[in-house]
Length: 124
Image (tube, rainbow, N blue to C red):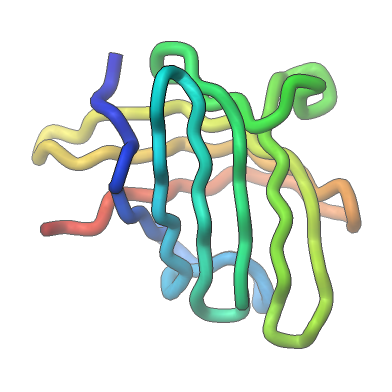
């Protein structure tokens, strides 16, 4: 199993569409006994929150799942005052340099859109 996410700060590897989570967004993770949460902010996001469970290298952010895939609730407030919510399913990968990467599949509930993204632990 990949190492604990507790206390790690991660960021998106590449920007996506304007108004969404991007490379200036920072995720701070907390993990204990197979449960985790993350707060995130930066760029176009004023504040966001994730909660879920971990089993091995899989993060499930919501028991009901991402259209049958498992997944996580994400709620965020953007700079323009709008909110978004959705689901995410992530796989934890240990990188050769000792950092952690999350390979994510996500889908919005509150609007149209789905895709994949990668977040990585920031270098020390």
